[in-house]
Amino acid sequence: MLNWKNNVMALALASLAATPLAAQDTDNDAKATENAAAETQAREQASPAIDEAVAALTETGNALKALEDGKNDEAAAALERAIGKLEVVLTQHPELALAPVDVSSTVVDITASPAVITKARKEALRLMKDDQLQLARPIINNLASEVVVRTTSIPLATYPLALKSAAALVKDGKVDDAKAVLAQGLGTLVVEEVVSPLPLLRAAVLIDHAKALSEKEDRSDEENKTLAGLLDALDLEIAKGEALQYGGKDAFEPLKDEMKEIRKATGDGGFGKGFFDKLSGLFDGLGKSHNEAAGN
Image (cartoon, rainbow, N blue to C red):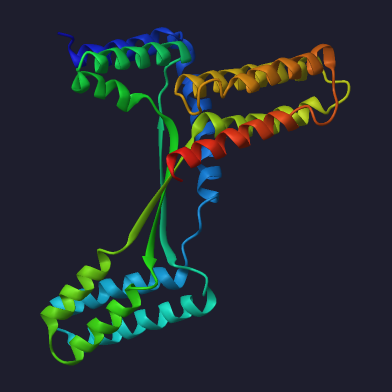
């Protein structure tokens, strides 16, 4: 029987072996910068928190604390402020069903090469076919390169009603009932997750840099070297996205074909506009397909 610790260790060692140790710190710094830019890009696509909704949530907490301390008048005042804040939200944003109060994000990024990722994926599939799900699970858990953006929101159809109900209960001296209603209301907060593949996000950043250089006439040797490096980096992101299957079967073939055309167009100092338009469209379409498949 295979040992899952050995499987994970083999994956980690293979990843380290793929890159000389002296180059790893530099690569890690560059990757961290790319990931930060990608994370910012993903967060910008989320709806920002609404200040009045945040204040309403804060006042809910203040009301609960006041009730716990036996300060019913303070609790009632906090609830009135919370209700007022949400009335402002409903007036200013009548189209909203959910009012965002918090946006957070996390980055998960496997550092292994596309070849190592593919090998690990095949090993996980083999283990599952052998009815060894628990041995495959730690491998599968590592097979991701993505930004997860979580948005927490107040449901505007029900949360204001809970606040009003709690306020009425406080007025009637039914403190325990009021606390229960507020706790139940807080339990209705909605958390939505949107997963954005890092290879697609990083590719967009690389395209922006490469596009600027590709349009420049009379590029220097150093600039041509930089452009070639950007194209190599794009090829790597395509390969990584394909290895992690952030797209259906053969979904990455058009991107690889287009990269060949771009290399032809920019080779020997070639320049011009629109070289990356089709590639950008292909990446956008791939990202849209992924989001639809993931239910984002």
